Length: 221
Length: 221
Image (tube, rainbow over all chains, first blue to last red):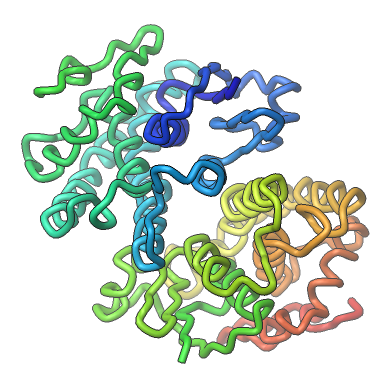
């Protein structure tokens, strides 16, 4: 059986779960508390991070490496794009969200609201949370800009760009910190993704002691 | 003509230059002072970062996206690997260096020694430099561990793993901060890379006001 080692609010794990869902590949989820640094897990991924995909004998680490592996191994549907131009654009945008959105938004909000709560580090730094909440606006504007011109972020079809973006946003949405009402185009793109079958398992994720925001599971938010 | 927008000490630009060199693809280098945020450059890459590859009509941003583009477009020699197992391992290790080594070593040393000097930010923080110099040891040990078991980092052949690793290390080596003599296996792997034709252009890079360390250009260091 295919296994994904993950954490419920890890955006990188979510990206992989969405890709598997879109390709209709069955898998089991296994929570990996990475801070415990289990020897068996470090043998799979010396970097000690989730996600890791076990696909039969294959162990694949790093969400982008997993994405490329899935695309090469299970080609239907294609999720990176079918022309060099779209593939370059899809990958560029996936890294935009995995690197830039992550460092400017996800990390600021998630570290302070969740990581510190469970793994020490003292009181949440409200300045960092405020920074993350400020930064999110221009990313949502960018999504709006792109989807006014294209069906999905990188072109006609759904790609890793959409899945990376929605993976990050869904985590912030769990915490109730996405100002959807100020970004109608981005919201309508998010609604389309949120209603896809691949997204439904994410809506049942829960972490101990932190309930999701009221609208998180609501398809008509 | 193919153009690479770059900065001389950008490890991500260097990775792309090495890939082009290994694939024997001619290109022109153009320095992009990203902090000037030129409109024409932002139109190519809204993230405002180097490297960007212009290949005819194609503009490709993000070093990993460029790498995948080159691999798909110019297949000889393959630089990601020829089997799923090697491709997963090569990508895992490339991200190890592009994310983990970068944040633990490159960013600490380069930000403090170079970025602050040219772009403000005050005096170099010697604590951060010390941290980067401490962290480099276990990465060099890891390279030694891998190359005792394999010809190159990910297997029998040179891959993106080697090129990512050497791109970062070559920047630190410019500054003279790689403790080669304490890591003989890593050094012998680096010597093999440093003598390849693709590496030679990197040895002539210079930035104003900062001479490279004495051994930087020396093939028998």
